[in-house]
Image 1 (spheres, rainbow, N blue to C red):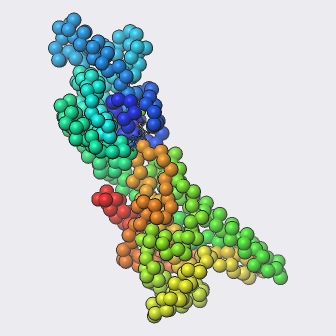
Image 2 (image 1 turned 90 degrees about the vertical axis):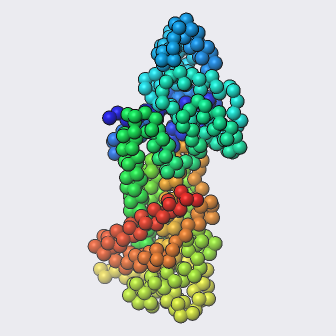
Image 3 (image 1 turned 180 degrees about the vertical axis):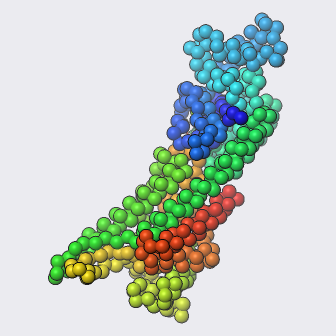
Length: 474
Ligand SMILES: Nc1nc2c(ncn2[C@@H]2O[C@H](COP(=O)(O)OP(=O)(O)OP(=O)(O)O)[C@@H](O)[C@H]2O)c(=O)[nH]1
Ligand SMILES: [Mg+2]
């Protein structure tokens, strides 16, 4: 079975390349605000694990459709041709000496159709329908290729109904799809509709959709694993300096804390890049790798909401975290755990005061058994810290997963930006608190630490799946 080939055609500047980028999941497709961005036809294979599922073909927009149609009609009359001859006449038009120079755009865009590609005809549902589109639709009809029309509502939807009425006369299937924001399910439905157009395409398209479904699940698992490692690495992070026998550790605090923040920032940026790559977003730029927001995330109630936590939730999960490490008041966890532990008994005001004034991590002095002293900043004991790391990673992953490859804008990651308030139900909170406590308790690389990472991966995968379901419903 050969993989279907779909050529995206239409007027200039209607979102053809955007639709190609979205359907081929390729952010290297050239997209631009001015007509004539695409000058040459180019193929974008959609592959999963080296397997070709289908090919999208990006083409330049029609420039001289009326003259092409006139040429075709003249030739048809001269040859007393019937409708059955029309596809051959279109092939002759493309092959005609001189046409590549006189009709460069039309030759480019018609060639893949002559060679057997199907048609995805794209129009902009944000502007009125007009008869100037009819010659190009007529030329496309002459190719005899299976075709489907897509109304891409650029900016607004006012004119979608009139487009549907007009397109219905030229195309058997008409879909309204926002090329920039189409979600996975919408793209899936478009592919399936395409599979209905030609008998030979149904099986390969159904197979392609099954492969895409599996690939999406796989990608989610890999993202969840990335998140689990990121949180574990963040929890283990500490910076150190050797101290002289009588040297004062506090002299190094500012520098150690700055280094700690830089490393945390680097961990997060590297994590985000890996998640973006997993989703085929190679060029994606996100707003400031943004740990400058961490302080705010940790200590500002307003931003906790963004990570699915409310004030009361934090008190509760903190208490569970403390209990899971083997005691409500765990000396090794320090004052944080003490306050959180007592909060359940009623000292909520005290906990909130602590949360409000809390720190990212603490400086300590380590006396090493073999001699020598160390000043160490971290690891963070802040009970909210892993929730914030997780919440930030979850929010980023949900944006990346939902983002089409047609978008070229910077991704806004600030807490409080659209879609950042993702709910976290109580059972997930409890599971997370337990697994965070385990990550803190067991040494990185130990079997129980690895088991905690596995468990966190499973929780993250479930949460990401729920987020995706929520996003496609909203
Ligand atoms: N808001 C919005 N903008 C869109 C949408 N689709 C495309 N655009 C924008 O419209 C402009 C043109 O998009 P392209 O995909 O380059 O259009 P094209 O049809 O390939 O254009 P040419 O190659 O010049 O023929 C770009 O600035 C896109 O970002 C959409 O669904 N919504
Ligand atoms: Mg283009």
